[in-house]
Image 1 (cartoon, helix red, strand yellow):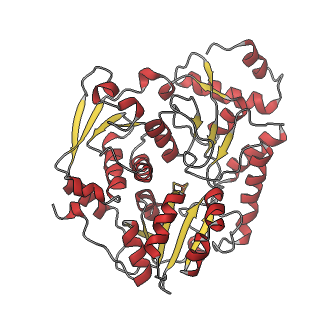
Image 2 (cartoon, protein in one colour; image 1 turned 90 degrees about the vertical axis):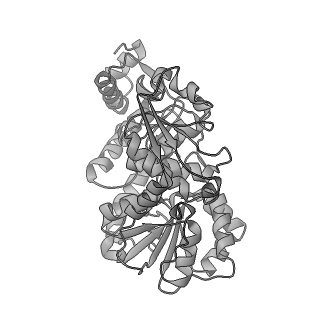
Image 3 (tube, rainbow, N blue to C red; image 1 turned 180 degrees about the vertical axis):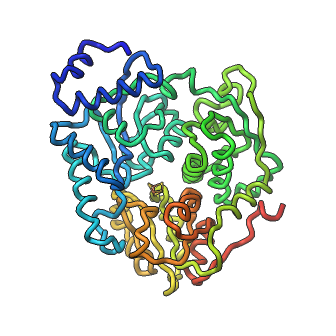
Length: 420
Ligand code: F3S
């Protein structure tokens, strides 16, 4: 790669060891992908925030020891646990210290303690066309596809290096010519009533991700009036079933106001369709619960927004969570403060809901939680839950999640696409 004099001086160690190591990693990444130079990014979202193994923790701490500080505004993905209410989340104290060390390392690097996987809703939000470096698959897909910011799918630790340098190699989705669709996926035989049920969107995202894999595909047929929370669910699901970094939702994605616009004047190399029958089949595939004995209802994957809390409070009005069910919601600290302030939190707690911040419900300490099965309004959660934790899960609309939590057994209304 061509390097500037300043970049060469960083590689010579003239700006400290943290910068030298971070830049050498980024240069290797650029060489691997054939980038010719580095380019500045205005912000970074670090995904390497879940304590998993000591190597990740030690990398962060080494950067601190070497005097590293972030060069650009940098937000943080969730910790594995609620860093403040970890006892209520049944986190064993013996695993707490490493999460706390990781937290200390990031605060020392001067990252912003957002601890959220929906930084596009409450965080350091980019604008259209902004060059950024984000980790966390759902956030990357949302930033590229819904906002039109530009980021590759940055892996853990690369994100820390990008934050310390404030630059990334110029390749992939940072370049306009690599953002065109070469594949078309059409929604076929759907009628308008099916989209009135918001739970269709994550299922469509799941199917889209399976079909697209790591390709850039355009999707036609999504109604213009789709809510932002539905797009969030779509992107999270698509990035969990496929390596989706950018999807062109025609009429919604800024770079895909028309199909022609995102195809860049070319014909799609492949055209596929999604039908209501496939949505129904996807819903069935996502069910790994063996019977009706759900004892955990979990929402907030990705972290719940204030609008999602309003909907939840309305659905739970004059109801209480059944004694046999634990109802958990995950959100960020900003939304938590708002719902605490306006009384919604007290209302939810009185109804038997527990609200957590910072953490991720997929970090399942099996020996402490010991649930039988989970229900969630998140396809991403339902997709990963069994394979990652051994806990059976079922996807459902938030309406059905609430009904199930209140009655203490699985309640599912027939979805409009089920009737087809
Ligand atoms: Fe967020 Fe964890 Fe879901 S990081 S998107 S809550 S899997």
